[in-house]
Image: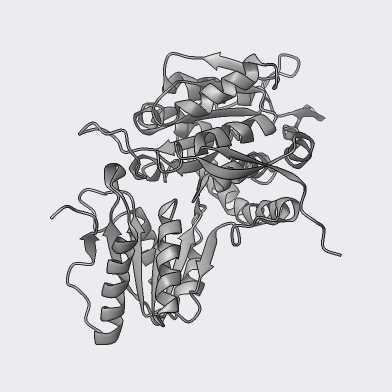
Length: 411
């Protein structure tokens, strides 16, 4: 008999609060954070849990985002389960420590309230800053709604701390669209959440013939993050890449376990296809835009138009083979991304998807669309416009000379 999902509590909360509840349920040992819009609510809410005695967490108040992640890195190296959250300019300030955290293989979890970087000064949502972290060696998960933000943040601790992985994880939620918008969110009861996430178990290593935990401990002194010059540095990078590869089945495994516990499943953990199999045109996107695109896809299907949506949930490790398999027989694909890459032929999603399809015998025509920058609304009409253009290309066989377009620019 198929197990029934655990009983859950329905609450009306925003995305930031949903992440805070996930951190509460994750039995976090140390949280270090610095306020920045639109992330502040996450750590404010979590600080309430600490002040009320609802969690046994050391909350470290620091003077900057660089210090916040540095404190989490140090605590994680000492064996603690650590969590932080930030946004935009805060992520840019901690960029140095973002590289350090993954290179030293510490499974810190960080929620990113995605917001455009300055300048011009802007505090509203797009994914430019988080996508700029794509080469830092973190696992990266993008959330469509507040429910997924709660679910993914809890899953992140299990994924990052898995013995085959030992890598930090970012969970992204779009600024204001999710962070400040009230939604219905189902939360696990404390006991069920605690059972799912468990306690962090440091890896064991052998020193002088005996097993000791891989953490900073005066009783068994070790070095974490030592100096490595040209003699060993490349080998460390290879091990880092191997850990990311080992994360691939773990993301799917944890997604499946979550589905058994809650009844909620996000595709295979990486991709959520909708009406892709027989589609003449497919849009690939990520984050909150996927909900709007799915609404339009459903409408156009009802009108007899063979369109489909492919939502990318996990960006790192990048599911290149899965994307190639799903899109191999699709005539035309449009990549919609809420970011902007200056001086490049298309954004990160466009280029990575295009590369994933390059070796196929028959490749789809691929167009890239920038939109929704700086909090600009992404409406159903925008996706209708994209589908109309994709279907025209499919019918005529004529592609535009420039495959990159700005879809939400004022006229």
